[in-house]
Length: 304
Image (cartoon, rainbow, N blue to C red; front, side, top):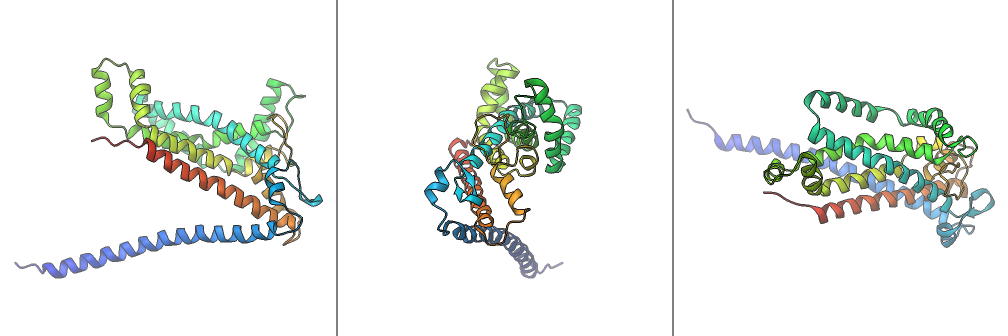
């Protein structure tokens, strides 16, 4: 029986080319979306910075953000954004890392079958629900622990803690993947040298997974910086430059939500300011993504 090999190969190549072309179009589509976002943010931000009332140096160094009275210093918004993000990382990174270590190194199949779906449920909860959770549970909890006179109803501490819970599934899942990708031979070699379970985990496995873990933490920080609904509901609605996490302060995303949903006239300096702040957020997250890739490259290790 003869097989028409050239014809079969031709059809096979045709199918492969079609699949390759479709995947290329999807990749190109995602790139075009990114380019479109950059173009829109840059164009609208130019309208803001070209306004004679706005000064770039004052925007970057000013301590007061009140566009209605021509004060455009965004440091209060930046300070509140970093405050909530740092608090979120102080909770999310250690908890997420230890959850990942437990799932990858210690948990049996039964416990893993319980914890993994729980993390998936946390990841699927809408962020606005987290916002109300921060406002109705976390804030009363902080006020009962530290005093009602010290903790305001709207504060960056409760928002930051809930954002830490929000990014916890992301950190735990990605960190578990990084830890699980470490070759089993490294663990066996550590055990053969007399290492205990905990010594092997923290002196061999975690250093070997440092590339993936560092990228995970930076991506989680980028996610925390861009969080919107939690800070819009729980952090406060007035720009305030304060180092006290128990006081209300408005973040960049919180301000964007408030202004975009208000009665600000189109193409006014107030309206255009949200695009300038959106461009700042984009630059922050883009930089963090580049840093995460660079860190992954620096700490990348290959095992044969």
